[in-house]
Image 1: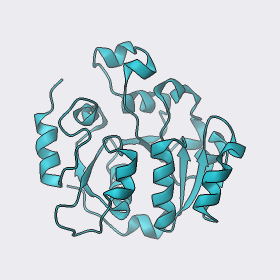
Image 2: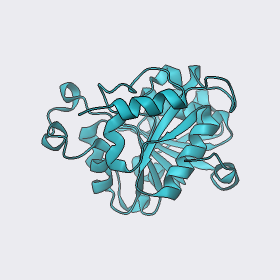
Image 3: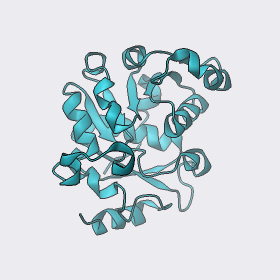
Length: 222
């Protein structure tokens, strides 16, 4: 069981975010609200992020993908699956990398290894980033709900979010961040178990407490 610790707030100050769409921009807002520095990048260049950075304030700056990867002590990758190959690997060696992605063949095109369920989106990212410590998180909640459903620790019926990963420390760092952002945490197990919270599973989308989310993970089928 993962338990929120003080380690995140004591040791982590900069979050790199690669992808500035709905999820990436909302996570940037949460990070800034909780006192973190944010370095955010997209596929179109830093100059296209001027409005978002102005909204976020002095704790945020726009950058290239390489710069965001290098600057972040933890890095969120929230890009379409087709763009995974553009994520720089070298700056992410040894770092916690949070994967928020979901597979929608209608958007992403058919990917055989995902269609036959021999792998997951997070495992594809881990394969591309062999030196990183990839954790699946923030993929089963709507962007607006990231800020709309966040509540302090101890709030009755607090919404819970899943982590899945192969590195225990990386999962703990991610769990600390999730708790700080306003959600309880449920550990789904290793990275390969991330399928239990993908599209068309019981836990994908609805607002669930930790106990309800654990039940949803157990009820998931392929």
